[in-house]
Image 1 (cartoon, rainbow, N blue to C red):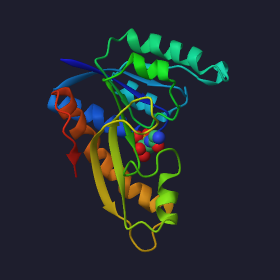
Image 2 (image 1 turned 30 degrees about the vertical axis):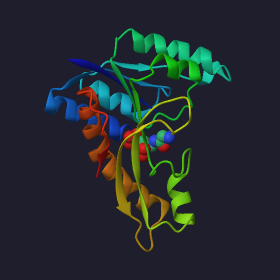
Image 3 (image 1 turned 180 degrees about the vertical axis):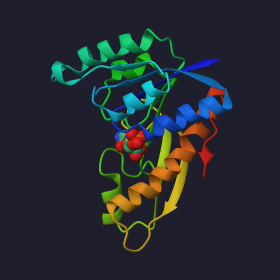
Image 4 (image 1 turned 90 degrees about the horizontal axis):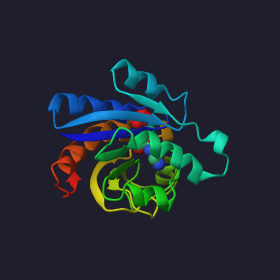
Length: 195
Ligand code: GAR
């Protein structure tokens, strides 16, 4: 069975939906939830489900991203994952780290890529007057938020939307999309899931 490691930085709601879907579907096994923030709320939630967790605080490494990533990769590799899912992991990764996990690293991003790579996606969609927003799961390549798209879900932007209301509507779709993409990816199927 495929072994899946998940990287988070915060609450981990996407991580939890992946754990639930793997438990229900039995198609892959979560072997690690790791965070760059030891205080990430998602770590406790994963531990409460009996999933091994690791925290590698990026702060002591300062600007030395590679040293941080080496420490993180050691913890990841000790669990021998076949697939790495970034789920609200908020550190930019160096090309070296990305190469190490090439072809097996997925990310979820809260916009309809190629629109709005980077941060503040919902504010940017609102400022642009977009009628539609959404989320994307893609393979991670050296270009930030620009790897092959494995799935997208769309939501309407409604009159009176704020950044928070739009983020909540998109997040609900993230929770539908990511497990479906993971299931396909585990099966070796890279056709995009379109919701
Ligand atoms: C999600 O909306 C995810 O798409 C976003 O962070 C949130 C994490 O929520 N990721 C990024 O912005 C990556 N650049 P969660 O911790 O509840 O899953």
